[in-house]
Amino acid sequence: MEYGVVVPQGIGMIRKQLPEIVADRDNELTSLMREMFAQLYTYFIEKDEQIRIMDSRIIELCKQSEVCRRLVKVEGINYVIRKKIKGQSRT
Image 1 (cartoon, rainbow, N blue to C red):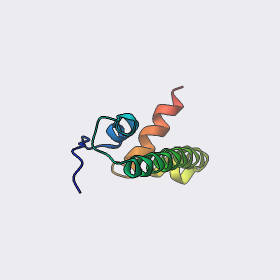
Image 2: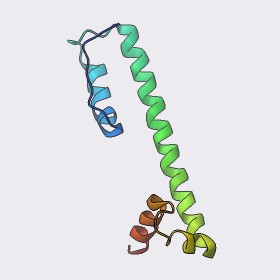
Image 3: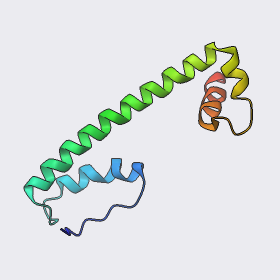
Image 4: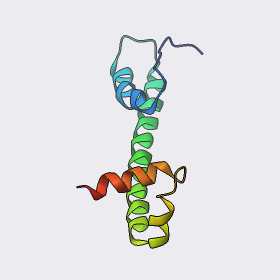
């Protein structure tokens, strides 16, 4: 079914626009769809927070391991963790 609601790609856009879409009583979503999207949004936020917590734990574990600290210095090995460790070590 088509409801005419369009959201640009990306997690940030969903995070920003989904609550607005659910609250907008002028769009074509049914009450059941609003309820389902509201529940999915809550689930999404909870999982997003859990991922953030796990990322922080992984980074802390990596900081405590000499092997991990050496590995993340290698170009192409988990760029995200390497960048976060370097960024957090400056603060």
